[in-house]
Length: 150
Image (cartoon, rainbow, N blue to C red; front, side, top):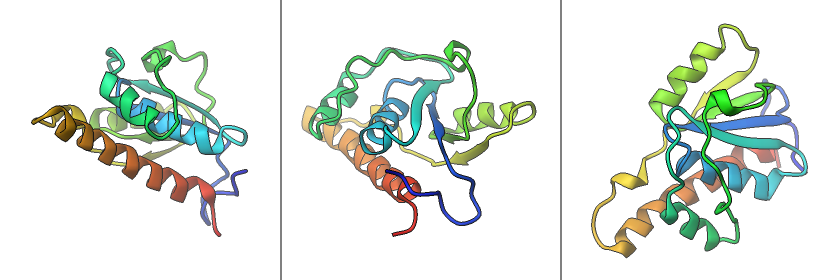
């Protein structure tokens, strides 16, 4: 179960991960957060301009036993409500859109700049390594952020 968040931050009971397309980074982050904290925190994801779920993202998540293959990319407008304590943005355009929302909504926004692995070139294995790197960085950051003090 998740402990309270770091000193000075309010407890997170609902988090939204947001990126550009909700096809790679935010579904990976949501899957990881759900895997570790799904009983304590409501987790979902969306994108600024949703696109098809990336099969490489699905493959590298399957490697760690986190299934995201049923994920349906969605936009902010597709969400039933915006009752989040925290929005974690993973791309500049998602961060900008989230900050616009803070004019009328009360939630915290954290920007976690995250490389877009779809830009990786090379062999299939080299491209998968780029996705693995993003997955592993997100896992580390999520565990650090939501586990609270040890």
